[in-house]
Length: 305
Image (cartoon, rainbow, N blue to C red; front, top):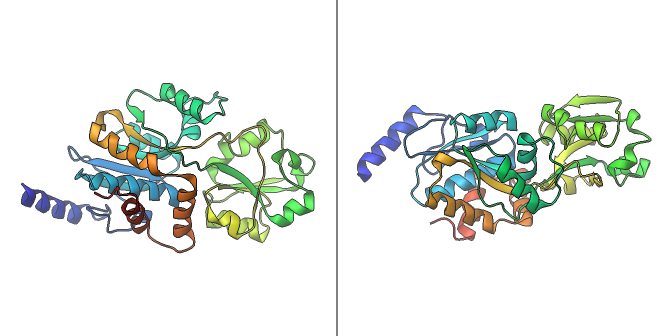
């Protein structure tokens, strides 16, 4: 049986050249192809480095339990990857509790992390299950340069009110539409900016645009090393347009087994915010591969076998 499985694995890797097979030898930041081979778990992710890393971590943890895995990482924004898990193109994703809740229940105003998670359970469709959430939190942050903060005496998003019409805000297309983004800044805080510029998802375009002065405000994620390394200032959010974002595995209910649940919950039980920020720094600063960073972390935590 093992020889048959090995032969099939070789054929699968030959045929699906874009899929990282086996131990994930190809860099998942390049994306992959989806597939549904009976008993195989297809792991997807959003299109930013931390999400790819978490997807790779889940994939390797499952492979350590001899569960067959395919990867379809780096899919796109939530609208794209949720469609993929709903239609069965992927079975498993790393997600964030608050924004996932708002995707399914836009009217939610909950800000307590435990209650957000509890409310999420009732908001998800029956075909999806959120497993145990991690202590690790990565929240949306509205950031400015230290120079801009000093010039306008900015500490909070509320401080933008007198000068917003002079400022250019930039972010991803999704940022423009979301409660934790431009929509919340406009609707909740009543801000009206001079211009919006479309950039990337808290990536190098956004960082460069902020540093160069092309934009005055953008959105990054709180685990990103770029905030500290560029001396950016995270503005306080007293009206809570950004709600708690605990990392949690999202899986198709029909793909869930006791072993998969136990394996993924064990990963969540270990992961902390500080650890996640350190892992992201390896991706952003050291330019390490998500495959290597995930493998090192799982080995350190004894989750690699």
